[in-house]
Image (cartoon, rainbow, N blue to C red; front, top):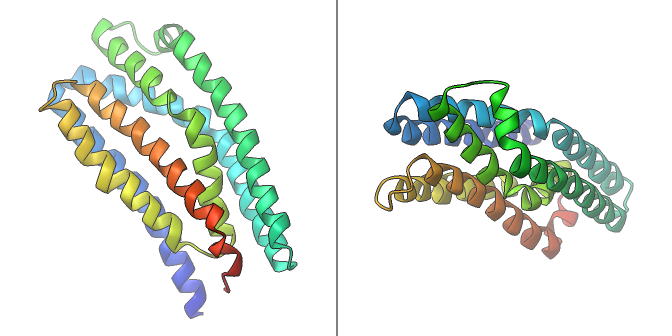
Length: 212
């Protein structure tokens, strides 16, 4: 029972970190008016919709890693995670290209307000620039969870989405004068950092020895 509560508690905190960091970004963006907030809302909702297949791939990685570790095949678990990450990167990379090219067309389906549309377009284009990295980041953080190591992705999320992303968003948006785009840049940097940290820690292989 203690093990179940420990794993579920860390997993719950992971989700809280992501949700709370987004709330922090909205607070920063709100300083630039309602058009910036509305544009951010449109951009993020389109992005979340586009991420649905990637979450499915990540959940598959959780199952494959847990199943193979349980069968005593850690190398197979690792290979499954890398392959799922590669497929996810292909998917998100293609989606990112679509967003970069067709952002104005996509946004036009939601608003005709030029100020709102401008912010939404910047959101789609800037955040999607990190998709190529986020594909692996999503899968590998999920793979840690599949191995029963919920602490590692929690710490990765805490650093990437709070210690780095929120302060960087404020600095870029206000002191450096990037405005709402500064928050979008910080979000993309947070996604990319999550990927790099996940790859580095995953390669070390300590998750293979995790005992639940």
